[in-house]
Length: 193
Image 1: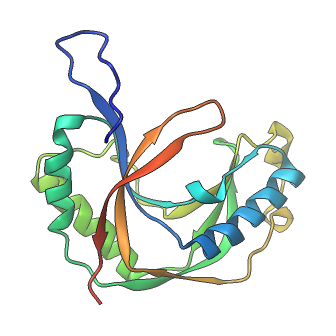
Image 2: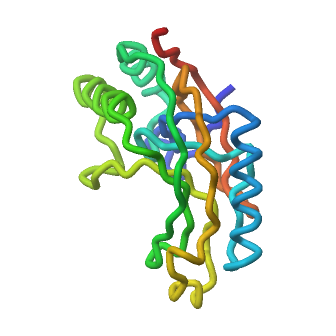
């Protein structure tokens, strides 16, 4: 059952914080989680828990829970082929104070992102992440120490290329908590073989 936020105003509908994502296998998530722990030990900050590692395709933000059937229908209309991603490098954004793992150029990923965006727009949904460009990444460490800003790319943990088979994407509800957000997959959408 979808956890609903109680509206402060009885006229305001219940909402849920939602996004679409690719979710790695537990083996890949554990490997990236270890890289996150090593990076946090070196640069400070909070490592991403392996069970929450994901690649966001479309961030919707707070949406009325009544919109869930429409979101599911829009996502189900997306036609995209299954593909493999290669996690190939790490980077950091000093302003956001986070370390991330990046993917090698992937036309199928770009196509999935575009197709999902088009389906959501056609159904009347606006992404909370617009108009920022799509920069596919997985967050490894948040709230890096301020002195980590002077770290060079050479200081970041390296990762051996990790092949990630993408066979589905998911709709996820995010619930903030004291130790970070908790995520719950609401619906899965298979990619064609």
